[in-house]
Length: 113
Length: 115
Image (cartoon, rainbow over all chains, first blue to last red):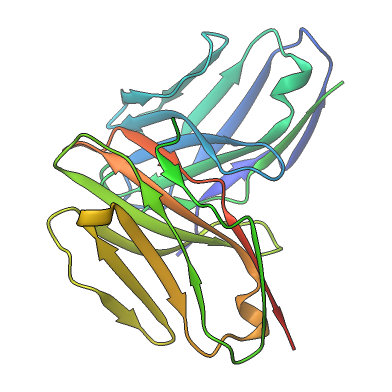
């Protein structure tokens, strides 16, 4: 079975631009979570979605938004990019939310210049 | 305050030595879940174990073992007879509440196993 897939792999954007990152969960998984990982640090929780509804939100500004589609795939949008948004963005899927083990994708490396 | 503290930033051991990675967590919830993940140099996080707050039994899986102690809010991870392939960054994580809609990772411990 395919694991969690994310696209694109790498992305370079300019300050002020907007970016959309995509994630497809493992087949049968209904929950997707997004994390930001800055080099040398642990992943920081951004959002959790379950059955297309937002179930949890971390301490990130409103420039960050996400949604989950009927097929359980998800998009993370970041508006008005700042240099500090440069990071690895990880998507994780689980059967039913944060109490279950999460399986991570390879991530999208975002560089903001 | 950090919800999950991994005080050991970097550890180096010689192959075949045992090594313990420490994890201390903080939560007011009575229902919570603890996890360990491995992030090898390739970068993709790999799930190792999940433990709920009502199950304090220690667990062993091959060379890996976990010690969960609610009295000290710790969930430590021991690798027995370490191997070079164990070299990675290990993260402890906490999921709070019945629905686990908030998730916290520690800062990670970088383990290097020297051949």
